[in-house]
Each structure stands twice: as structure tokens, then as C-alpha cells.
Image (cartoon, rainbow over all chains, first blue to last red; front, side):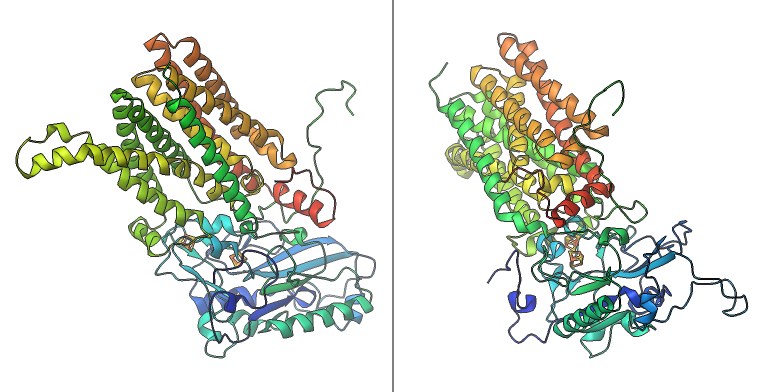
Length: 303
Length: 321
Ligand code: SF4
Ligand code: SF4
């Protein structure tokens, strides 16, 4: 029957009414191997024919995209910060340090000694939440749950009411200005239906973006984080992998090397609909107070 | 610890991290059209209650004024609701599904139903203009009783129309709208009652209308105060900046309107002025609540700090609902 509003859910596709749903598909984005090449951003634009997002120089490290938007469905965040003491642990963990993007050919200048500075890079994307705020609030049914458990907007239905934009706890979905409709990552619904890998994951040269069955990705991610901890990268943590979190777990989750807010992610998001029943109860009480007022005022003895 | 020992801030400035200070949740794409819609929807609801009150007490002035303003406010509501869509010509897509998890879906259906019955009630006012004989004569006889039922039907739907918008706002990731869900519907309920009473104060004041104005304004002020002070950091946007100014002005207008309605109840002029103050107060309340939410979404602090406290397992300074 109706969608459950909150809490862990075995399979959102089944919950949405699919009878023989294929396994839930998702992304595991391992930021510890991201090199900030933005191939994902470009591949996504190419495949999905996403318009340009303006050519801006934001002065925010190598990030000139700024964030996810109607016209950017993958966004690579760049954070420059002092490194924890064990910055080389990542190298020992099998991650080759590729150096920072240079304006010169590698090796032409002498290697500078490693500094105490580190970069964090993360390719952000729609989380395809188990309990998706955007989907819950959409009044037209334009947003729907696919058989793969992902969340997709139907552009022929959306009337641009804008409710989903405020319903998303991650600030992902956005209205395209010249078009009036809401747009976001579809997890390449057209590709995965044909057994293909989404464009971003396909283009990612380091397998920072991994696509697959969510169960398998979760296992793989747990192993990866255990390995990193073993190798001394104690700050490695998973984000969005937990079915007990505020959105019932993300279909697209991450391995991060710092707190989520450093990357522009909410530290402990919850689907607004979690409290929907309580909200309607309060509204009902307020409505009753209006009825009571009307009765007291107009049914009382004449004055 | 300033030596002067000036005002201690209610909420200490919290340290927090962000990505270049960029917002985390996306600020609403809704424009002020939606703030106006909140007001006109509330006004339609309040006037419908006023009109039904006029029906019940045999006061044709209140009934007619209430029905007329209900229709006008309803027209305005529909206009602003459609205007704010990215694709206005697709407004009817709202009516292709009924979605219980979407307050906008339920609200659109409610507005449509309300519009239907309110239209019948308003049309019945024109019955006396119809000829007494022939088929139209029949309509002339049938319309008033049908209109009476429709009038009460409109008033029965009115409280829903006035308060669903609070759920609409609260069921979002906009921090300061989401947090205040226990009190926001009472703000909107009070604001709707006060604006409906204001119509009565202008059109034909009597003691009942004054009473309705006072209760409405008191509800709006009381619940508004809780929004402004009861939710820790997330109350801050209701007190600061433009939203703070709007809400302060709204409070003054509501208080002045309520007191004026009582004190000046024997004077048509003072009553009408009190009504105008209450209407203006209701408008400013809606704009203030709207702006406070937008500000809370723009500044990542309001997203990060409460969630960080939650994540760290600290007790968050929220009243339990
Ligand atoms: S991240 Fe936002 S846009 Fe994506 S599914 Fe979740 S709520 Fe919807
Ligand atoms: S903007 Fe479109 S997708 Fe978003 S809630 Fe409205 S109709 Fe649904």
C-alpha cells in the first residue's frame, strides 16, 4: 500500500508497488581515490544533454561548478585543508598519490617535498534516497520511484511547482530557469534499463564512482573503509550507507575523509516527511481551534 | 565577555564548517507570490467563516461581505498559485493524482473543493435578481437554500484551507519552516481568523466580529512568539534581518488592530481602521514567515549546527512535539 514515510526499508521499489523489481541499484562514490578530473561531470552532461551551467571562475579552488543544480547533476567538490599527520597512509593503502593538477607536465619540474597540505575531492550526486523528500512532496506524480529503486523526474509531467526543491534535505534537485521544470540525476535510467553503466561511473578513471547492486556496494564499501582504517586512515567514514539514518539510507552513498559538512553535505539529514503525521495532527488541532472560535463567536447568545 | 556586559546573545554563535559558505539545502525557488498566496488563502478561509457566521446570526451584511471577499481572495489565490509555477499551463497536472504525502496535492484539491462550494454560496446572492417565473424562477427559489448549505460547507472546509499551508511549509528541508511545525499552523489559523474578522470590522462591525478579531490576533501573536523563541537556533531567523522586522511590524499591527477593535467598537471609522491594521498584520506575518525560511536555507549554519549537535548525540534544544 502507501509509501512508508520513515525508517529502514527492504526495497523502496517493492514499497512503491513494483511486484518483480530487479535488485536496487546505486552508486558508491569512494572519495579517497578521486583525482578531481571532472570526467563524471562532463560525461553526465554529454549523455544526458544537460545544458551548460555558465562559465564561471568561482575562486573556490578548482571548483568552478559550485554545486549540484538543474544543469549540473554531478559536481566535483574541491577542499584545500591542512592534512592530518598520516597523509601518506593513503599511499600505503594502495592509493597512488598523483600530485595536484599542474600547469606543467609531470616530471618537468622537480618534485616538491610533500607538504602538510591535502586536497579533498568528492563527486557529489543525487542520493536516490530510500525515503526521498522530493518524491514524497511532488504533487503531480512527476517524480517517481523506478523499478531499480532510483528516483526520477518525468519531464512531461512536471509543472515546475518547486515543492521538490524545498523537499530535498541535500539541496540536490533544482528548477531550470529558462525551462521552468525540475531536473536532477536520473542515475541514467535510460542506460541502466539497457544493462549499461551510468555515464559518470563509466567515465571515472579511478573507479571512485562505482555503480552496481546496492547490497554489493555496501559490502564493498565496508571492506574498503576497514582497509583504510587498518592502514591508519582513521578519518575514513561512510556517509549515507546506513538504512537506519534519517532518509532510510541513500541509494548513492560515499566514503569521505572528513566531516560531511566540509564537503557541503548535511551532517545528519532526515526526510521532512518523517514528521508528516505529527504535522497534520498539529494542523488538525489548529483547524479545530478555528472551528471552536467560530462556534463560540457565532453560536453564543446574541450580545 | 565584553567589559560593557552588553546584551548576551540568545544563541551563542556556533562554530561550524561548510563548503565555502554555500547553502546546503537549496533556498526555495518560490517567490513572494507564495507569501501572498498564504495571505489570500487565509483571508478566503477567514471570510468564509465570517460569512457563515453572518448566515447563522441572520446578519446579511456580514454574509454578503464575507462571501464577496471569499470569492475575491480565492481568485487571487488561484492566480498567484498558478503564476508561481515554472510551467503555469500545466497547472492541471496537480489534479492528475491525489497524493497523501504531498501537502500541495491535498491543498490543491482542498482549494478546488472550497472554490466550488464558495462559488455556489456566492451565486445564491444573485437569486433575487432572477425573474420570478419560468425555469429561472425555479432557480430563484432553489438557490437560497442551496446557497445556505454551500455557505456552511465553505466554512467547514475553511479551517483546512487556512492550516494546510503550515504543513506545506513545514514538510520541507527548509530548517526554520521544518522545525516550527508544532506552532506554525496556529500562526496561520490565527492570522486567517483575524483577517476574516477584519472584513467584518470594515463591512459591519458588531461584538461577535470584535471577539473573532481578538481571538484570531491572540492566537497569531501567541503562536508567533513560540516560533520566535521556542526553537533555539532555528528561531533566530524569525527575529533577525528583514524577516524579524516584518514580524515585529506584524505584531504591532495585530496588537493595535485587536485593541482598536475592542476600544473603537462603537465607531465605524475606528473599527474599519482596526480591520485594516489586522489585514496588514496578516500580510506581514505571511511575508515574515516566508522570509525567515528562505534565510534559514541560505545560511548553511542553520542546516549544519542543529544536525551536527544531533549527530554528536548532544541534546538538541527543541521542545518535543
Ligand atoms: S537526494 Fe534529494 S533529489 Fe535526490 S532522491 Fe534524495 S530527496 Fe530526491
Ligand atoms: S517541480 Fe515538478 S517534480 Fe518538483 S514537485 Fe513540482 S511537479 Fe514534482
